[in-house]
Image (cartoon, rainbow, N blue to C red; front, side, top):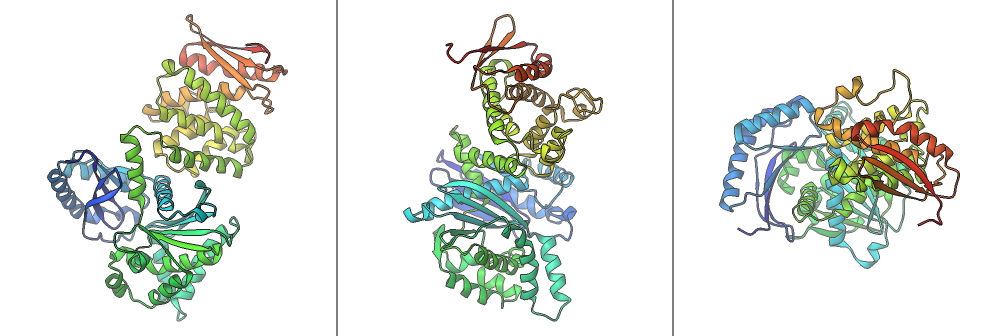
Length: 513
């Protein structure tokens, strides 16, 4: 067996599949699919009716992996259409019957994987002129449509549009109740939802559009063994005119589609046409790179202990976009992040936290003040609520919870209603995250104090841990930092309680070494 071979099992809402991949070049060695799942009418029934089909397919996948002598594999599931309780029950049934443990992916992780695969797609179709174009990635999916923007090979922003089974059923119901052309009704329905994005996006005649997960479109135009190709607007127009006339059975046969995918084909075709009208791109590309490609990119980075710079940049950019949307003082946030990470790095032998915890601290420093947009008095509690409702892409549910809780516990009000480490809310957190939340909250509180005036008076800090458990933070500045010193003294208690270290702030002029 080649050491580079990797097995990935991925369960979507309409099938479960195994891909055996060579991680060196992401080439597919072998692929196996289950029969299509029964499409459930409610979230609680997704996967439930197909448990025997799922487990039988997994048993076949295990035999195939054994044939290749592959022990290096992972099993992922798309959790977008089911709630946490259902996911727990399904995971337990699968583990009992097959021995495999599923890693559920939330909506943010799915979007993140799509964006990573989008970057890979851009590299495939990239030409010198294309690098200078704003490039949109339009990703069609079983639960939503995502539009992401890249400029100069860098991720800029992403937007989501719900278009899952529930929305498809609504469209079908509306079209069944009217004598008018169903496509016109579909146009109005989807156009009304795209209209909100239209107010946030400026069309650029010099942009490019990459369409992802367009199964029927790929069947028409993607060359055999190709992963990306260019099409013209006329090509898409011809595809659209042919497709909207086809009954579901014909779509399945002509484009070799799963029944569940075929149900999405017409709404997706309308949505793509609307986005082409909105964006007016100069060039259009299609790609078959998918969520699985993004998961493989992450796996390759993990196996080779490589720093995933593209991935880290995507997550941080998403956090910064959120901070911008809620009018956070970005200069202050950047200063706090810099101080927090410096303290984290200098205390690695004390806090014993992972590199992932460092990333979560940086994200919390970026978004911890978004709640000020809603309520200055309870801004940190508001920040936590905003983050609970708007999860950061690329993070698991557990990691998102840690970020929101770090923000919640930045408050230092003396009110009995104020959440605090050790209080009622904290005691109800998962015990596995309580200590990490406490440690990172303590570090961020001190870092925030170092720019209490929001004027970046302190340009640099030097952190020294003495043998007698004394932590000294020397602020390099010639400015008056009375406010910072007052805030620092007010915010050190949690740090001293959590780490058992006495901490003090000293000022040194910039001319001192």
